[in-house]
Image 1 (cartoon, rainbow, N blue to C red):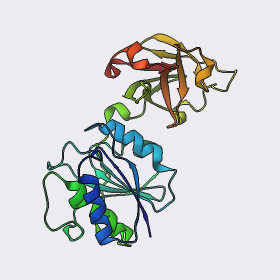
Image 2: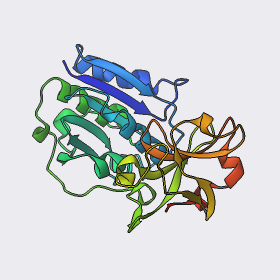
Image 3: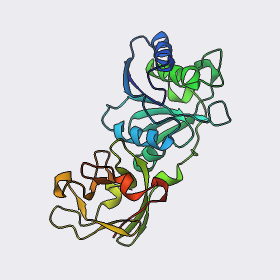
Image 4: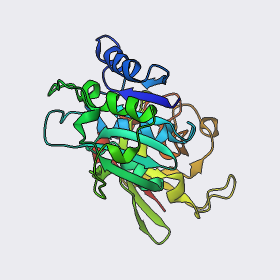
Length: 263
């Protein structure tokens, strides 16, 4: 039986996550359900996109990732069913798939529209229960992806989370998220940095935040003193700007105003 993961901004105080699990269990009682997190910042699609990309390859092929961060619920936005590298994602078409889409091989993308596989009574405010959960359960039961709707080659992309600009040996990106430690997660990935001389002891490139130099790309926090700024590749494989035992966001200011450059 397939594995289903749940990622939402619902929190755990209310009934929402439990109801989604109830729907899945009613349709696919043998399904294994894994909670990734329900503490995505409310309405923060970029945060959700980062978490989805970060977990993707750690689950086996056939896994069904359900992610609900949906400020446009009830509007004309679509629900998508995609497959990348043998794993599925079911998500609102609002940019949540951006980072998976830009870095992994797309195998299939469909618009969820076959009402046979949705709940009979639909709420305009809880598509996680009425659309995403039942689709995941039917997919887990062996329903073929083509049964859920027509193929599409278009999906919404988050502008800030798309690929950075590359000009020769210079990469220009931006900070897109602040984690709970106050570190700045950028849209510059390990893959974007491939080919640059970043090896320990041999780095010849430097990272800048709004033209302020923060040093080379380092390997771990203790390479700088407590209270100093450091640039390093985090566990999500994106370039991060951190303050050793401090909060980088308080040093540099609003995340939406921060431009990151590697040169």
